[in-house]
Length: 128
Image (cartoon, rainbow, N blue to C red; front, side):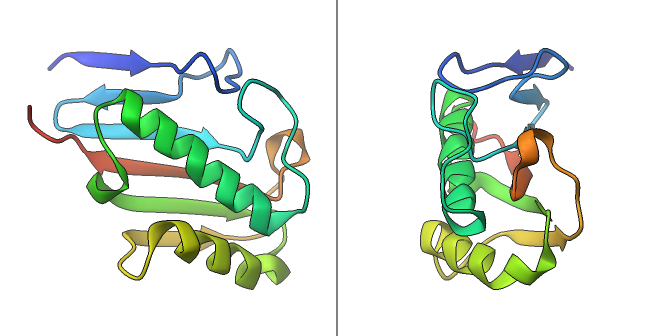
C-alpha cells in the first residue's frame, strides 16, 4: 500500500506533522486549528469562529486530497473548555449541516497556539 503525505502551502503547518496522509482508501487529516489562511494567528472571537475556520481549513485539506466533507466518516473535536460545547456545535452544524459524520468531543484539552478548538478527521477516499 502506498502512503502519500499531503501539505497545503496556504495553511499553517508545524514541522512535526503533515496536513493529511492518504493510506489505501482512507485520508487521515491531522489536528487542525482555526488559523487564518496564510498565517499563524487564530481567528478572533473564540470557540464559534475558530470552529468555523477550522472546518474551512479542513475542507481545503480534503480538497487537496481529492475529497470533501461528504467523504468524512469520523471527526474528533478537542475543546479547551467544555463550557463552549454549545458554541462549537452551532458552528459545526452550520458548516456540516443536519447529517454530520460520526464524532467524539473531548474537553479540557490544552491546545497548540492557545486554540479554543482543534479538529481532526478520517475520510474515505473517493475512487477516481
